[in-house]
Amino acid sequence: MPAKDIYHNIVKTVLEKDGWVITDDPLKLKWGLRELFVDLGASKLLAAQKGERKIAIEIKSFVKISPVTDLEEALGQYILYRNILEETQPLRQIYLAIRQATYREIFSEPIGNLVVEKNSLRLLVFDPEKEVIVQWIN
Image (cartoon, rainbow, N blue to C red; front, side, top):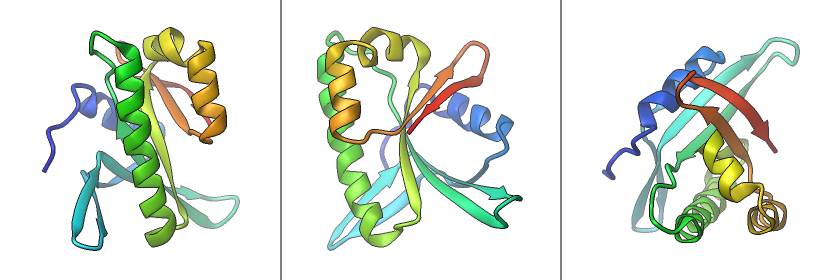
C-alpha cells in the first residue's frame, strides 16, 4: 500500500465534519493485473433524493520544489483513477483534495485553470488549520 499524504487525516476529518462517511481507507481499484489505491472512498446519504452519493478522494500536498511537477503527477493519477472508476464504479465521482494555499498558488493561475477546464477536474479545497472544506469545484 502507498504511503499516506501528510494531509490524509485532516481530509478525513473535514469530510466527516461535512457529513461524509469514510467507507474505504484506501479505496482499492483493480484493473487487469494491477491494483491501485485512491486515498479515500466516502459516501453521503442524500435525503431529498433518497439516494447515496459516493466519491473517491485523492489527496495531494503539493510540497515539492516545483508546483508544476506536483501538478503533473497529481493530474496523471487523477486521470488514471477516474478512467478506472468510470469502468468499475461509474456512479462514484473522483475529487482531488488540495489545500486552499495550493489552490491559490497554482490552480488559480492560467495553467491551473487550463488543467481544471480541459480535464473536468473536480477539486475539494480545504483549510488544514481550521479543518474545514472551503469549496467543492465540479
